[in-house]
Figure 1 (spheres, one colour):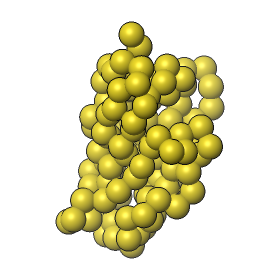
Figure 2: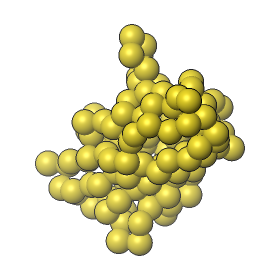
Figure 3: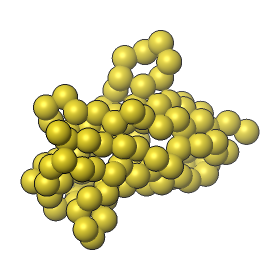
Length: 113
């Protein structure tokens, strides 16, 4: 069964940077686009960006364009979300996703001074 586990969340000051990781197993990650979503408490989960099979970003939400970038580790098993110039509005639980409704448990990111 496909499995995904996020890590790297934490507390960061506005304007700071953070890198999230998504460790995959149970499938061949090179064959699938991996998506990043986030959810603010009390609101619906929203799309952030997609990382293609070859690594380059595909769709990127306007709210993070120019600040967030996705990539893949050389062994294809880990997908990254590099977040720069973080804002308080970026505070959320971040999830990685694969088609077929497979999700990780999420990792909390809090942006605050």
